[in-house]
Length: 89
Image (cartoon, rainbow, N blue to C red):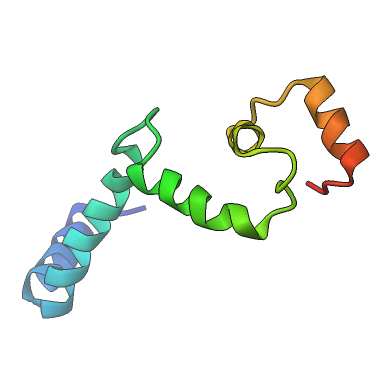
């Protein structure tokens, strides 16, 4: 159990520690960062997909099918077609 005295001692230690002055703000920003742009695709995802497309097995299937795959929006028929073409996922 954390007592008030223990908590006060820890806060005094953090206040006098220069490493804590760097780490605490970084941790606070790291906690908030995953919630920025929730529900929106980051701008760099399109660029990454364009670059990574060359290294996939989707050359003959098409970029739109690759996008649907990456967004988990493939229908059952499309998944079966990709399996028939030998695409592993």
